[in-house]
Length: 433
Image 1: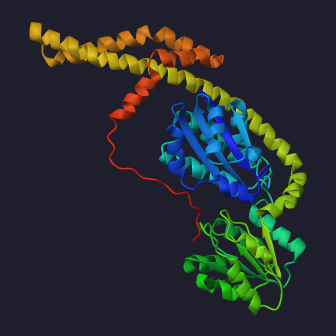
Image 2 (image 1 turned 180 degrees about the vertical axis):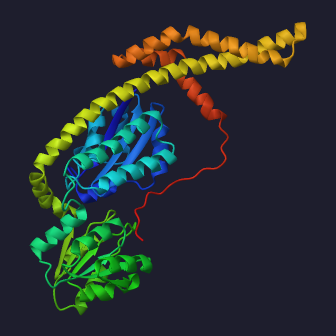
Image 3 (image 1 turned 45 degrees about the horizontal axis):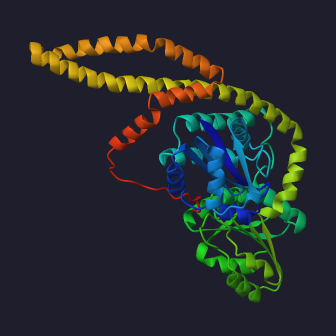
């Protein structure tokens, strides 16, 4: 089998294009992908800088190209990586090497979160389980053994740095909308540097953050009032709709007698794009952080090299793990087929012995022991050979064994035997309080 990934990231796409590439419900997307007969596993990753789809199966590259068209994602902004390149890419992502702000820590938590979500949705099975666990392990290892994540390495800190350079922070008042992970990072980056107000849907959560950073919590419904008073507004929620509209800003600007800076680092976006057309308003988005990203990369080039060395070493370990997994899958198919035949034959043989000789059911364990021993000895040499083929990377043989012993048929049979006792879907939403 193959593993491939479809990537839409900050390298080729704008924040608006990344937002449009995500279609909102993790379980629905996974189920749609798995409905393709060539796809065995699927995992997703969605952050403010990327949308990625990972698939395991056959003809994966061709499938992802078709899938991108179905999702109406332009060829201009997609990248597709296959097999070793796909594995290498994910390890780099988890290590922070593919982030807009190189070395940022949030991506590791996001990879872990989506691993858990996709597993609950039924997309992650044997192969992607090994791959994503290794990616998380590598992400931790890189951060423990290098200084790639030291200092200001997040979208939040980059946004604060951009504000400092373009508008200054001394004596400024800042309204932060949202007290989730991103809002907390912004608030801590601004601590002791500006007068901070925090608006959050759950007031108590806003209060806790305000207490931590020496700021003041305000009611979410009072946003307009504090926008009229503050110099800078930074919006960080995970709401599926715009928090700040053009009409709202126009009302605010009729009250204010000075310009205002609005910074939107949410995805989906919190601020209507047309807000930038309101007189006296400067609007920054994640797209405006690219210059900070390039400077960050120059500063961390030595740490990047150390991290890349670790990633390459771990990639070789991962490839070996997957080769062994391929052998286990083929071996498992052989033994499952043998087990299926064994159950049928024991039943038929016992019925004959009982009918002809009156033998009781206490003979069944003896028959099972005999056939178990026979199967183990009979499949011993094929098992050994399959492990050798896996180590040598001879996957065609493994695929042939899977076909000869009815791997697809066995999987379908197991799935058909499951009784559906209810279903659920998980809408992927970031915490907004």
